[in-house]
Image 1 (cartoon, helix red, strand yellow):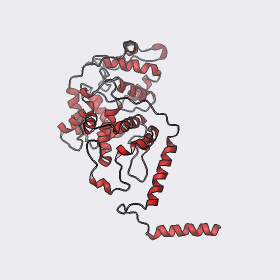
Image 2: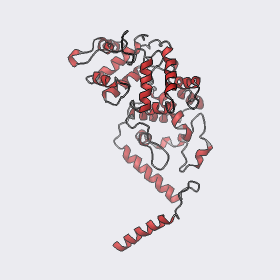
Image 3: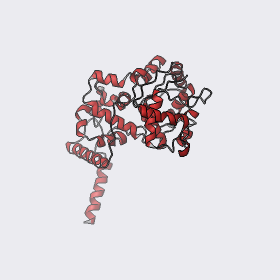
Image 4: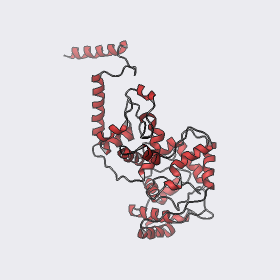
Length: 343
């Protein structure tokens, strides 16, 4: 029996060594091989998804995810606005058209695919493994994908033209996500108009070096030179800050105002405005007023979980929020969203 096993193993090695088994993509898989690979993939994803907690999805997740899909995913999968290029039909396996495939997967299974990718298929993992929040935003977009018309999709995805190096086109690309008229309280994307020049320069440098992990921004800023980054942030820094958004809950705003102005000495929580938005303050510290509350909530949670990198002062912020409780986060975000931005 042992001899047969050894002989079988040697025979298999000899078969592979001979080169008879083709690896070319032009001929495709045998039907049995194709079935087995898909069965193994579905079984693996199903098992990996067990016990995954699915977060609540919000409308604010959709534009950020749609913009990333347009830049990072549509090239292979196509989109509701544009079919995939003919060249991808020569890949093996062929990247699927997603409208017909998404219903077959649960939210937890879609997250496993988006976050970890699929081996031997060309489907990559999410660009930054630590940003599960971004991968979940993509799942929320995929769940909505079936319903989107071409017009709906273009409205969500904005304008993407990163392959052009003209500064006007690059600025339009940024505005595809960051334009004030595209942002609401539920947005996960920040306003850039009137933000500190120094802060934005350091933020883009941190994205480029992965000191501030973000799969979305890694793709959005890919290939930009240092000079291009400087030119872009200078344009946004010169713009007037947008008017504040209406606070969603006055009681939350009042509690946030107390924390922002006075902190909570009993819990060793410093006042936010001790550092942020001071007339003679450090230009590397960002302005918070007028930012969407959902964006601020997400950033505060990333800092509390020690997953938010950034410029030279990000560790100071990590220490500043370490005693915040979850119930402090939304009041602070709600207050700053409704606070008038300063110059």
